[in-house]
Image 1 (cartoon, rainbow, N blue to C red):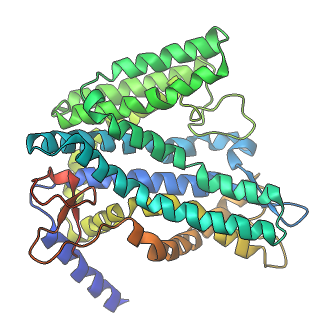
Image 2: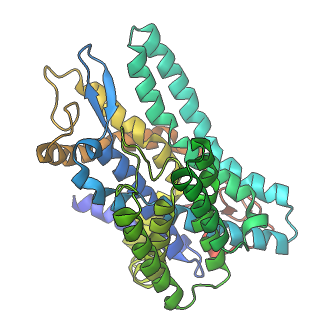
Length: 404
C-alpha cells in the first residue's frame, strides 16, 4: 500500500508540473463530477432483474420505491455538463476565431474527439448482440441490454449539435430557450397538444445550461449574486412545479410513469438545471482551493482525459457483472433481485466497487480511442479537445495534458 501511495504521489506531481499555470481547474473538476454523477446515478437506479427463462429485464427502484426520488436530485448532473460544455466551447471558438482558425477546423477537432470512442462501443456491441442472438439468447434480453448501451448516446448527439451551433447560440440569452421549454409544456400538458411537440425541448432544454456556460465564459458570473439568484430561483421554481404543477419529483425517467422529466426535458428539469448550475458556479472557489492539492488535481485531470470512455462504457461494465453473476446458483441480492426494499439498496451499494473494477477493465481496453495521437518530438504537447493545432494558444480550460 505504501508503495502504491508513493507511485501515486510521483504521478500527481508530474501532472501538477505539466499543468499550465493559467488553467482553470474548477472547469475540469465540475466536468469530472458531472460524469461521476451520471455513472453512479445509472448504477443506482437501473436494475437488471432475472426473468423466468434465465434472461434479464430492465427495471428501476424508483418505480417501486418512489421515496427514493431525492437520489435523482443528486446524481442527475447533465445540466452541469452542458454548463461546462458551453463555457469551454464558447472560449475555444472565440480563441480559434481570434487566431484565424476556420470554423470547420475548430468544430471538426472537437467532434472528432467526441465521437472516436463511440465507434468502438458500436462495433463491440454489434458483435456482442449478434453473438448473443446466434447463441440462443432471448431477443427481449438482447434488446434490453442494447437499449441500455445506446440510450445514453442521445446525450452525445445533442451535445454535438449544440457544439456545432456555438457561433450561433453563444450570445443567446438563456431566458429564450427557457421560454421555449415553458411554451412547449403549456401546449403539451395544459392545452392537450401532441406528444411529439415535447421533443422540441431536447434542444431547448439543454440549450439553457449551455448558454449559461457561454455567458460564464464572458464573465457574467464574476460576482456571486447571479449564481445565488440562479440557485434560489431554480430551486423555488422546481419545488413549485413539483408540488403544484403536477410534475414528477424524480429528475430521471421512471418506468411506467405518465410523465418523464428527462425524456424529453420538461420545465421542471430546466428549472432544476438552473439550480444545479447556480450551485456549481457558487462552488468554484472551494473547488479551486481543493484543486491546488496535487493528488486531488491529478485524479480530476486523469478523469477528464477519459471522460467519454467512462461515460460510454459504464453501462457495459454493470451489465458484464450482472451477466457473470447469472453463473451463481441463485439470484444475487442487489444484482438480479427485484429492487423493492431498502435491503436491495444496501446490497446494491456493495456492488458499486465491483462495477467500478469492471469499468476499469473497459477503460484499460478502450481509452486509446479517446486519446489523440501524441505529437512528434519538438512540437507542443497540448491540444484543443484532443486535436493538435500547435499554432493556436488555447484558453486554459480547453487544453488537455497529454504527457504525464
